[in-house]
Length: 455
Image (tube, rainbow, N blue to C red):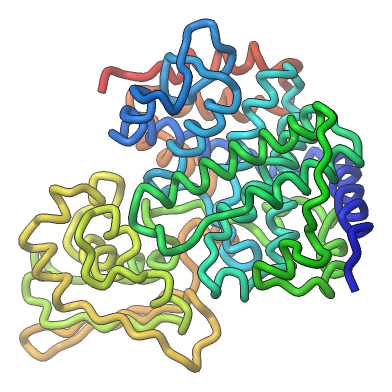
């Protein structure tokens, strides 16, 4: 039976694991870190961020220390964590560890790590070790809680993200094992977020709040406040959130096995929408490429079979907005079948209102196969008005651990996300992060390279 001594064991395992990350481990995380920076930069173009910047929710002043990735404004550290995380998750184009944590792992950990690095002026190695440790924490807790946790309706990117942000911050801020255990206890009290928010601004807000609360949890512990909220024991996270406290040893065994970006691996997204739709979208793109130009207008019906859990994630069968469309198989597949590219420009209200897209959506049927354990294996069958049909299946999407992006592909995505910036120069600078001796000078140069255009 789990005891509260286990939280100290957990904290100690994370603490010592973070000190042992290798050059190869850090290198494995760089591409995802680049992707997170690009996603945040793109997110600062969205109206939701402009609304937040103009509100009283955050304190934006020239004399504040913390960098906003897509803005020339400065914030208090906790506000910067909130805004950078919110921006990075608004387009749902950030990476996703889809099997164990079932969570977007970079956004909460990276946002917290950047703010902590700005406070401490740490080295690039320290920043990356903190980032890696935060992701490792989310994956380890995913081993404890999932799949029941996610199936119950919890949004694991938020509920686990608070712990990832706390750990990333704690490592960079130099917390002891005991302080780290306290930070994790504080994080228990802030762990929240439900999947009912999918398709609205509340989803990225949950991740942003988790990142901020995890960052603050580490600061509270460093300041000397105490917390005894239970992680593994009675009335604790595992017991209340669908997990199994008896699996603590299995959780501890996962820690220290190397980079979580290698095992289990993290998907870098090829499309700005829920990962659950990606294999279907890729199959639709392949089918579109096999059809004559504009032949999609002759499509009679589209049948998409997926694993049994996917329909509970892509819940908007009749989406009302483009944001809901990111969690709608009907909209995602229609975009992939009808448009030259299902990128950021596809997920707009203008595209959503296009009569051709609406017409196609009405012809798409998603079927979750009860006998199919593999959630992402997908088969798309397109029936044409002349009676012929085309079938295509995809098991693993582009960008997944089985089909990872290469440097050229991530540069192309970075160019799309950071319009107006030189993607090659930005990429090269970010790849030099492991050799940076101090974050602030590295950040200052990166901020110049990412000087935001006039949107």
